[in-house]
Amino acid sequence: MTEEVRNRPLEMPRRLKFVRGFLWLQAVLNILVSALVTMVAMDELDHGNEEAGLALVLALLGFVVAVVLIASAVRISRGAPWVRVAVIVVEALTVVIAVIGLINGGPVTQLIGMGIAIGIIVTLNKPEERAWFTR
Image (cartoon, rainbow, N blue to C red; front, side, top):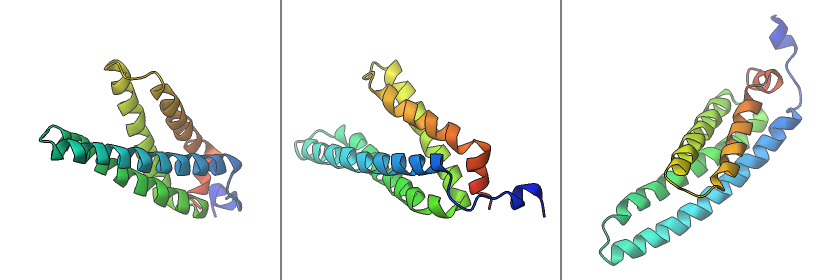
């Protein structure tokens, strides 16, 4: 038996409980924003603005991300190995999108979401939290 297997945590690390809370928050916000963008895009499409199709596609992508976040938040307490990878990918995309938004003159409030995403990535790469997913 390797040392890492013997030192597996029996209870989810405290920091992962915070990560789980932020995943739920992000999922809810993704659903709300995606619903709002969907309604606006549908209205624009009804009025002949075909450029709103891109907004609709992005809103649907937001719903998909919300589903991934919800599934990850549910399964994180069981230490499912795919959760760590999925969350890191979603959070990395969040950082990239926030940086692009800031470069294009988007609101500075994107720094909040970017900070949360970076915090989650850092937390998931700490030894104790990483061990939770390799049990």
